[in-house]
Image 1 (cartoon, helix red, strand yellow):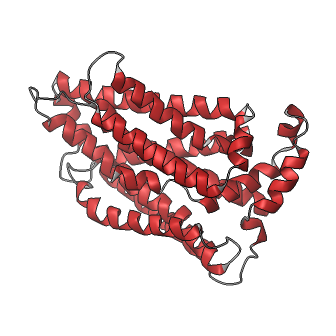
Image 2 (tube, rainbow, N blue to C red):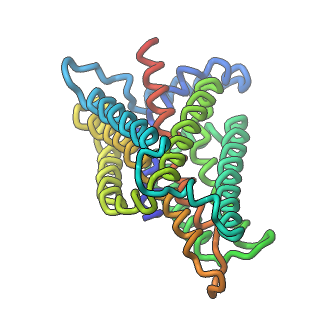
Image 3 (tube, rainbow, N blue to C red):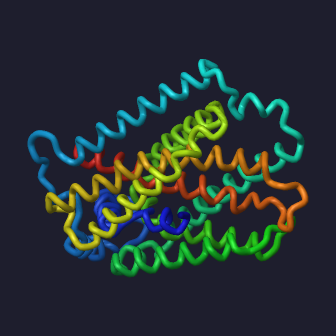
Length: 329
């Protein structure tokens, strides 16, 4: 499932929209890198984007997607209030945390420490690459190569990282973990060209969404969201199929715009559900993993799920915010 989740991270249509948004915010970038004006002029012709799509009257795929996301947000707020205020008769993880043994506390703490470390490495690498000429090489590269090569590389790096046994201290497992996080940062580096303020706002919104979902999962009864695995996997499969469809259909077509809305808005809802699922999965594994197992508890593997959920949520929130800014202009 992790491999499929990585495959649904972005599509060529998303990369095209990133490129267009970057071109519109490129005046400061061109002042830092003289001689790039010709590059941006040719890129405008080379990439198809949402700019060529006229807003259709009535109900469209985008308005439907916004309605679905709004409904999911209301459901999440309601669930947070219901479980957070203790209206449920069942105990949640946040109630059991007071009686957790120290080993469970250490497992949860180390998992979220690696989660924060992954985000820090990804953000640092993405920013460093966006300040260099490497980012323009990524933008000039064929979308097929970026999406296909990036997908294969991220799946391979995640499999390598998760297959290595965990041991305390800096070792091969940690090197693979840092390499995987750095690779994700490399692939999302073009997002930094959208502008620092917009990226920071999207990061702040993502932090709020992830924090609210994690708190909801912690307050909910044990295993409440663990039953969502099957439906979420089916929904993720649909998002991945829509991703593949955007590789062949232009965003200016009705079908292409509909598929892109599924990838963006549907993906946001699906990965929000996965955040609930993975949070409770972390808690369940921390509580039930044998103390004297053949392999020790692996906090790196446990953190990869919520890490990829956060990356996917961030990409989609940033895409929606950038699209909204473009329309207002």
